[in-house]
Image 1: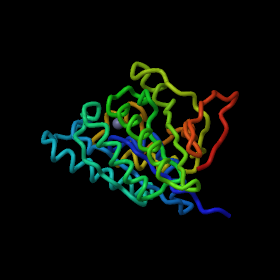
Image 2: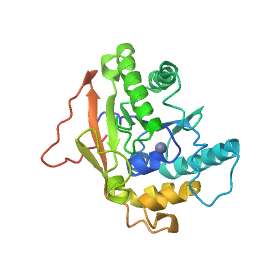
Image 3: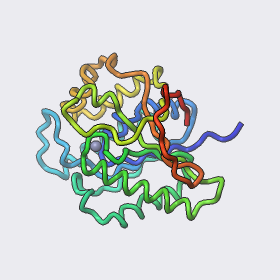
Length: 247
Ligand SMILES: [Zn+2]
């Protein structure tokens, strides 16, 4: 049996990981598969709850603590905070950001890298900038890594988000090519979302009931698009029916 692939996720905000792929991470955790989350900002602008935290530094620290709690629920084995200011990623030096992500890839050598698609799911400029930097970092890593070390790059889609927030965000930019069955991990996904209590309004909007501990709204699948494998781009095609995949 070949070794389980290490799965690395790169997202801009604390909570993106739980919204996008909390169930997948919990599945990896259960079978002892190593996971690394690179969180680019500490979410200091994301005030979306009744909390009265007006100081950005305080909010950033608070959200880092929430993220650490969610990471524990999901069994994330390595957590990297890059601590860029929230909401600025479209303006930061893309070369510098790419380099920081590249360093983690070369150091940790994941078998799978997951990030947002070019539309950012929600259209958030930080999400879009993250997709660009991660894609570039993976392409650069391919030049430096051996043939047996090349990671697969997946974009994550959240069709659930469009169902619950139809007025938000663009239409998906890439077709979904695979789904991970998270039926047994809906509770962990719910608990991880709940750990981001400062974001209760946005959690409630996309996942009504979850903050109160009712996880029935959480679906059985998380959705992905394979866009690079073996050092080459993949042109994603919409399959007749979305196959269940495994990392
Ligand atoms: Zn986000």
